[in-house]
Length: 131
Image 1: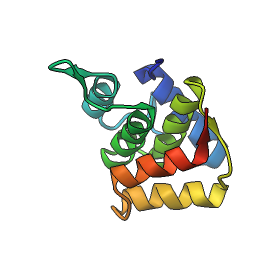
Image 2: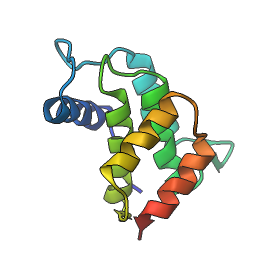
Image 3: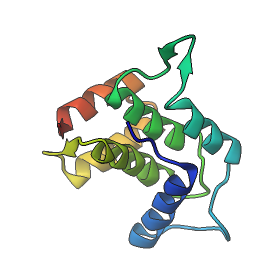
Image 4: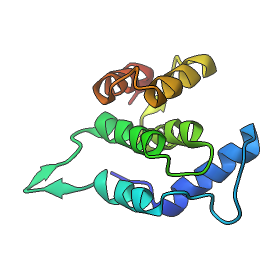
C-alpha cells in the first residue's frame, strides 16, 4: 500500500487553493506542522503488531478527518482533506464512482461540523469506490 507524504499533502492543498480559491500564506500554508507530521506517521502505523487503521477505507477516512479536524492548513482544510483521501484511494487502485461534487462538499462540511463520524465516512468511501 502506498501512503501520502507530507510534501504530497502540501501540494494537494496548494492545488486546491489555486483551483478553488482561498487564502494562502507565504510558504507552504501549513498552520499546524505537528498535526501534519502526526498524520503522515499515524495512517500507516502499526502498534503492538496491529495496524492503527485497518483497511484502505479506514486509512482514507483518517486522512480526511485529521486534515479537516486538526486544521493542518491556514485555509483549504476541507477541500484538501477530502482530496487527500481520494488521491490515497485512487493511488491504491480504488476508483471513485457515482459521487457528485455537491455530495463531496456536503461530506466535507459534515466532517467539519461533526455531523458525520469517522466510521460513517468509512462506509461512504466504501459506497463510492470500486476496486
